[in-house]
Image 1 (cartoon, rainbow, N blue to C red):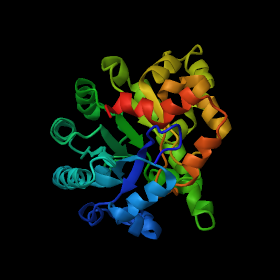
Image 2 (cartoon, rainbow, N blue to C red; image 1 turned 45 degrees about the vertical axis):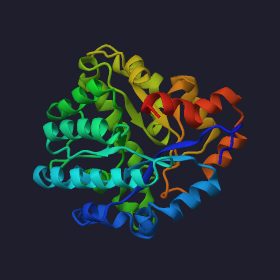
Image 3 (cartoon, rainbow, N blue to C red; image 1 turned 120 degrees about the vertical axis):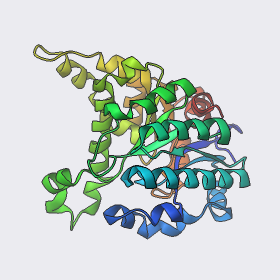
Image 4 (cartoon, helix red, strand yellow; image 1 turned 135 degrees about the vertical axis):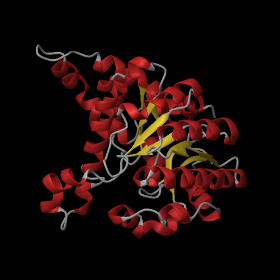
Length: 323
């Protein structure tokens, strides 16, 4: 079941949906999963058969966006807890094939911190995933009201995976609306997701939360949402005269980890390795938004030494996620 000298293949950004969660999601987010809903619903034998065919040993499951980020505090706390319990049972059904990231009801930061602790300590989850902006106010996760989540993540040594969801409505109207009919993916995986999540990553560094809680580990998918390519220029610009100044590049390369989810490009991966080091790169597919087969085939053909491939395919996940 492996593609590299009988070593494991762990894919860490692999999605599913919970029917009760989806029943409480509204608008464009609710329709986003439509074309592949059957694949998102499947967390049993058919999914495992697809994993076997692609030689993937383990998927770390996380709910597709927007999960609980769109929900009010009362609803989100209840829905997230039930969904995490259900996901735990899914993993228990196939303990050698599935692990999990927790869903957090971020509208209630204290409850989110407690739910992260429950999921890590009681359910053996590997961390948590947060999808896009929170609530009607569309708050980024760096807002100080969310800092208790970072504090608890540091205490638990549990990474936070910052994942895209639909862009802010005002951003959609200003940047993408003109082309949304002909190119709907422009606002999502084509560019909108990248921009929205890159901004979230930028804001996390600038907010000071990682200076207050320097042990926090942040994961970004899609090879870092373009931030590795821009690191030098961002760092240079933010330290020009007239700026407060921040050790942006140092903080980013110390606290962030990147995955290959939905981005199987040799030049992009090599840029990430050069900027971040291979120890901060983890394998992911972004299933079922991306098919399983291309990712392992890409890794097989990648002009990279065997030891570094092994780190990306399983070693770094085993270390970071305790697997």
